[in-house]
Image (cartoon, rainbow, N blue to C red; front, side, top):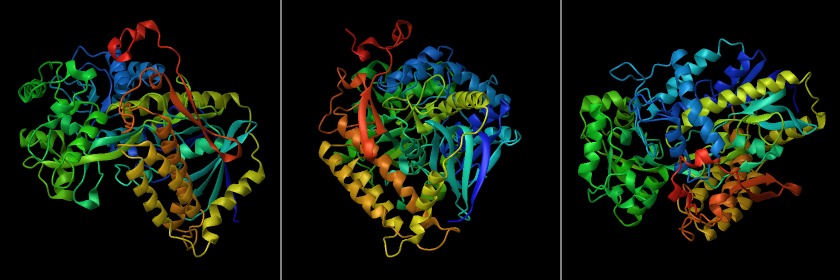
Length: 608
């Protein structure tokens, strides 16, 4: 079966995006030995694709901002289904994490007074996103890498982790293979931090790059960790839709934060028709009022509270575009028009340089003169591994999770910009806690040879099969099915069909034969990724079928109302059952204390 190389590190961090790097930095600072395993090249993390900014209540653009308001916005945007403890920690600690990045060399855009500039984003009451043009994620990764590579951690690039090992119920290591030469590796560890990102490659139209196949979610589930809120998949309202070769590529919310306006085929700003009652007091009623707000922001004055409706939360905007298309008012290629050309061309190029070049090069559109065409794209999963809010430890002792692979902070819908601050806040906590637990362990736990042999056999199995389908065909069929049956608008019937289809796809996946050997074989990688893609898709479909209401990013056409009496109080919990069954139950977070409840909108909480 081939030689297995053994490595030993106190802490193993799986994933090298913002959360993984921040965890590895914190663990290294604590003096333990750290290995970082990443599926792609270092620097290619999905965090790079986060463009608009990192949300933190620095109060630089508007002194009225505070952690309390950020907490309220996060809870309200998540339709009150998030873990209030994580929302509080995040809101309180995000400003310090941004200032820390600046101390480490991050070059944020500046206000005329030299402070970190902040821009508006959907669902945030005040300008809150610290940004570097529209390349914030890239600067975040650059800064963290520059900090991290000098700290002595070992980096294993282009490795895929296939299994987590447990000894006596506690995590004891993981198995991975090198994607280049196919070599096999076991990492013995005292603690492990999962920071593997999301699952959006399971949908046909998505903003995620090829790495986002949900393997971190699946690794935790297969090891027995509890998963939560997997029905909540955010469809970002603005992805490119033309030409077909670029369909799904993200168009940053920063375009709307800088005054971009959405219109339909009739030229009308349709978002005024879709303001939910719970947001009625916060958004402009007329185009004149909305433009006046933008003028105030652009001029640097204090913004009024009534923002343009394009800055509603992502779930609302995405469903509005979908509704306009269903009503026959879509743009030329089936989406909506997004226009920033009314602003000064030099300002557009300065504030949104990435978007200017992206549309110029990929769509031959000059956004300083022409409208963009945009439409919803699968972008982020709010669900993931359930963690302790104070330690980030999962239900498996010694296994921690941070970033998109973990759940709790975002509830039913994530606010733009909260993802980047999520990474650095909870990545730090996970690294700190993992290092502390590793120090308490006197030695490495033994890993059963039978388990190693089993996963080696599973990993090499596709290469021994002949006459089966090309795994790429099964992947494409899976993504198309999830797009059509578990997409932005769902019904119970379609979700049941999806669950049945996934059973059939699982049988097909087990018979795929990529051909070739272990060296530079992308077909082999796809054949192995299918098991994770199918299981995370099944989690989503199962949880979406059980939640018989519409809330945040989860919309049931057959249950269009939001049911606060029951579903507003519980989150879905998925676990691996006896005999390999996928079991689902429901749980509630502890009651929000009175001093935090007072910060929230009582009418939205449906109290009394």
